[in-house]
Amino acid sequence: MRSKSFPVICLITTISIVLILAVLLNLSGLTTYGVNELTGLAKLFVLNIPDPTKPWSSHAFEIVTAILWDQRGFDTYFETSVLFLAIVASVALLSSYGRRHMPESTGDEYTTMIVKVITKLVVPIIAVVSASIAIHGHLTPGGGFQGGSVFVVAPVLILLAYGSRFLSSRGFNEVRLLAIRALSVTLIFVVGLVPVLYFLTHGTAYLFQNTYKPDSAFTYPYLIPTPIGMILTAGSIMIYNILEFFAVAAGFTLAILLLTREFERGGKK
Amino acid sequence: MITLIIGAIAVTLALVSAIFIVNEKDVLKAIVLAGVESVFFAIALAIFLAPDLLIAYIAIGLGLNSLLFIYALKRGERYEE
Amino acid sequence: MISLDGLLWYYIVVAILFTITCALYGIATRPHIIKKLVLLTIISDAVYVLLVLMGYRIGATNPPVVPGGVLENPVFPSHKTIVEFMHRVVDPVPQVLIVTAIVIGLAQFVFLVTISMHLAKSTGSFDIRRIEGEKE
Image (cartoon, rainbow over all chains, first blue to last red; front, side, top):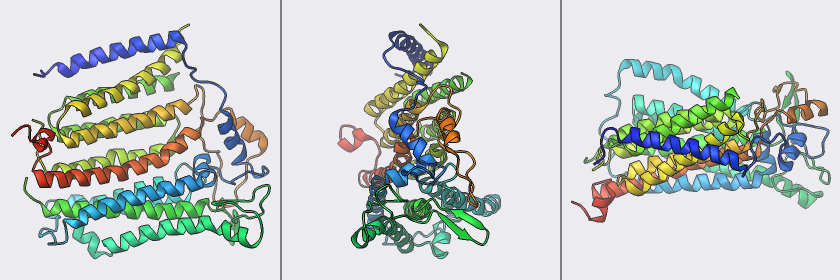
């Protein structure tokens, strides 16, 4: 049988093997590490994306989000669809064995006043921070995916402190959340399809195109004049980020809501 | 240099947590140890200059994954064997 | 020649590979389904860190974000600033691959957890040997 000291023996053996292998790999010179040159593809992205004088520019300060929604936009759209399908599959499985009776307990009799008050204080902060992460996705680290997954922490706290009935009674029911999710994914595709309309009527344009290209004059507005100054939207990247924020947040809130309802209903151990 | 040392320590601690998770009989403890392990990986991501991933990873790896597994664990037995 | 930087670099790579190996061993030998899923998350997290490490350069000081981005009245960086920035930045391409993978991974785990809840509801256990009928 496994004894109490088994993890320690395991650990010492593993770390010594790791050290020996590290020395051997270093001596063999099989791979290069810490090369001081970027690859050609990375160099192309870093030089072109933030520079508005270049023809392939995205007018964005954040290179990761710009690649995600401009250079790899079509790919990211289908990754969003994969996310949508996974959520829909788990919702289908979960709601097939719910429905017959709602949970008797509201789920909030086990939490104390301290938890409820702290939740009430923390939830607006999380919501605002996640929205800021999503809206400033083309300027600072973050974006739609990151903002959405940070936002899901707020419904989780509410569900744990107040129970699922609280969230359902405030308008966050399954139908509405699924509608937000589907609407966001559809709108992402519509925003990506607008260049095709331009192609049909005017001239060359590409699917999921952001700003102008050398052979295409189509461009989303990337600097919008407003009373408080020029607002940088980086073309369609800001729109995609906000829509993706709603999609990810609504999808995961829906899944967690159904799982929590299942959890509160109880069942045989 | 110093960043690589911090990264090496974080990755080593993640390896230690993985070994402890494999040898843990109580699955609830294993889930909590997986949260600890994801904190070490998050330190490694911060050291290797990936703040985009850090924002998504710390919310998902530490918060939502643990919650999902604890929800599922209520349906069956808690201990292995 | 052994340099300390190189040794640390290979140490990190081998340690991550060992983490993956440990988790694979646990998936193969331990019977509890939820524990298998926990170890699966560890494998995917280790792969994320390994891919990010592939894009890291020793001596790089900047994440792939051009400094100075503001929403109102932005000043775009000049070509000289960007070339200087290029020498200090890590490789952004591996990070782009992982951003979506993290979020899709969570959706897959929601699905897997739902399936294992159904399994436990119909068989009454998470133990794979009890589900297979080898042990009572």
